[in-house]
Amino acid sequence: MTATAPIVTVIVPGRDIGLFAPAALDSLRAQTETRWSAILIDDGSTDDTADIFGAAAASDPRFRMVRHEASRGLGAARNVAIDLVDTPLIGFLDGDDELAPTALERLSGTLAETGSDFVAGAYVRSRFDGETYVPGRVQPWVSAATSPARTGTTIFEHPQASANIVAWSKLSRTDLWNDLRFPEGVAYEDQIVAQLMYTRARSFDVIPDTVVRWRLRADGTSITQGRAQLPVLRDYLRALRGGIRVLHDAGAHAAVAARLELILAMDLPPLRDIALTHADPEYAAEVASFVAEIEALPEYADARPDPALTAALAW
Image (cartoon, rainbow, N blue to C red; front, side, top):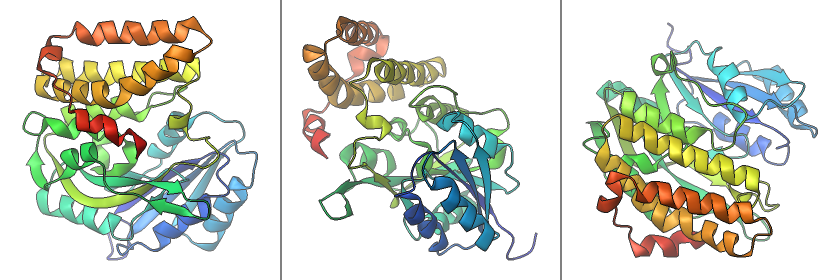
């Protein structure tokens, strides 16, 4: 490997994100660590996303593009790209988000120092203020997962890490993905995968640096904004159940309790509010069934949600 050969491949999937894709690609071009390549996956877009990705690949050899004529979903898009990775490290960036300029330098540099299987950083959400997208502050549950910096840790030593469930806040060794792939055909596909990473890793690192600006789209089309839809709710609860199961089966009981604390404080209150006025009684039934399931878990007795987290819902 030469000095300029890429050390990390960043997988950038997207569908109908033409308004945001240029900023995502620019955030890659602005990286202080320049030894990267990127696989751009256009997942059956009907807007100009494919044109933007194609132009990037034509003008810069660090980008290559794969196009799905019909949408296969975010999980499948990422999985297709994982099979093409030929660098020691792998990361993810959704095509409507942005990397902080030093993200790849800090993440890859940490792994070079520690030898851990992956590293997770902090992130913030960007909201539209009427003119532009403005990044907010690191939220308490993100901070609890990533600050202070810890190296060579495990989910048993640092159970609060389980709150950092997104794919794009992490950089990992490609070998970790030999038998790991995202669920396909469902939303919230990264939650179970994140918990599998925590429980399978020999060790991982966390750093408090903000590495990603996560965009909350002003038009309300982000996946996390669709939880009032019954199919999305079912995917959401399936992901929560699956993540809890992974931690429980690994014997990471303190991490299960930590997840339950966050679910009780952050996830359930808005779902219950939606259920109160939802036209379909199945919505309330799904929420009630999930509540009964988590209350039956042995770790539930150890879950003590922080009321202050509920106030952070407005972030």
